[in-house]
Image 1 (spheres, helix red, strand yellow):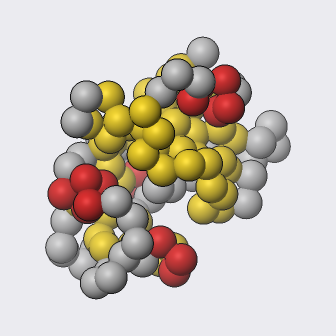
Image 2: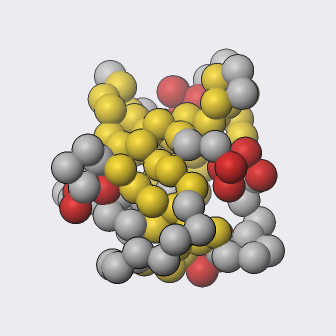
Length: 113
């Protein structure tokens, strides 16, 4: 099953409450703090993430089985764990990035990219 989780929007603006994902060269806000489930993304210079994520908004969905959800998809970013208990991957649907997220049973539902 796939369920809407958030929309991620790249921005250059520094926002309160950002979390730094050092390896990704990225600052993210918590979509749970947004009435409309917006996660703001601010990229550090030299971020290793794909250019399309730095310039194009993405939509994120939770899935029960990330590996199964990736079968037959155009993978933009292979599965990784940005937060403990959360596995994510990015795919491309045409030219739009889509984030797929799988949470461990006991994990809360943080916003992450």
